Length: 241
Image (cartoon, rainbow, N blue to C red; front, side, top):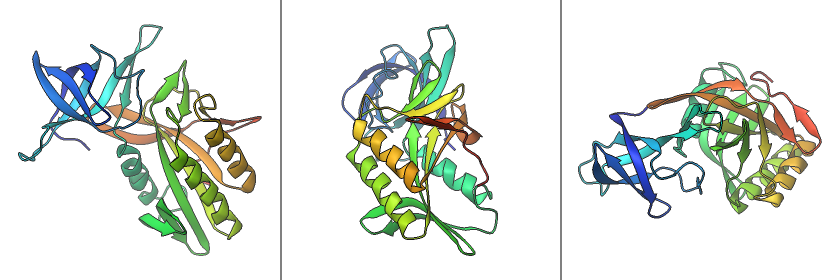
């Protein structure tokens, strides 16, 4: 999935897109492939993983793709931070026949109304729109989304609910970019409107799924379904619906 991966020591985040690291004691400027806050991850002296670009014209020759998070129990959790990785992983997972079967036609980045959804799936009379959200926020084994207010995310949820009313199937897949997670839930404290929209969409028939991933410094792949808690309900996601 990634090429030329090396480890480094994180020093500081300069802005949403740029960070500073030390590679073998030499300070390097790197591109951060996640514009979320990630304050609990990008801490000084954290071990991070970089992918070296083959493009000599780039301003930064490294992409920051993963980070090691030290847990309170002394263990280390490897978290992929690449915001593009969840779509890549879900695309591969869908094309392998998960969720709808192997004969399904899968298209990426499909326009519907005022939104561009991550995937559209069609198999016989089944037609579905799918939105993917990457999750990097973890607290005591619980994964949460979002880590910052997301009006765009609320818009997508509401439009998926409209798709259901028009006769389509609709899915939101939360890709938890780590292992060791016991539960997924919306981050109500961070963005109450997102949590409320998710609950309403669930009631309208939008299927809310969450999966953890097998993570290495240079790969990320969809693995197991994770229980989803939305308000008063808790349900177990399934890979075959």
